[in-house]
Structures are given as structure tokens and as C-alpha cells.
Length: 61
Image (cartoon, rainbow, N blue to C red; front, side):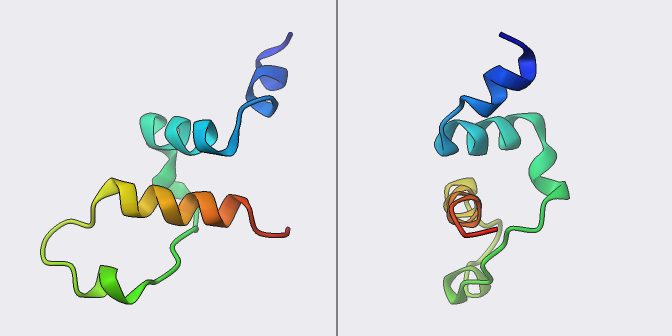
């Protein structure tokens, strides 16, 4: 199995975790611009951003 094969076999949840762990989430436009994020005082929790990235991954291309 190649590294690419291993990546392609990951679940959407694992891809999201890997993107955040590697810091590449800053380079992918996946934000859903939710109102609750606009109203958040301070930093938006990573779990909220991960949810948006997961939904983005699961959209039709």
C-alpha cells in the first residue's frame, strides 16, 4: 500500500483530523459562515471548524 492509498482509504472524519493535525486546514476554504461563529466571543472552537470541514468534504464536487 502506498501513502496515497493509505490516505484515500481514510474515513472523512480521519481526513478532517489529519488536516487539522497537519495545519493544512488554514489552506482549504471550507468555512460554512455560520451565524453562531459570528457571535462567538474569542476563538471559534476547533470542533466547530472540523464539523464545517466534514460537511464540506461530504458535498458533491
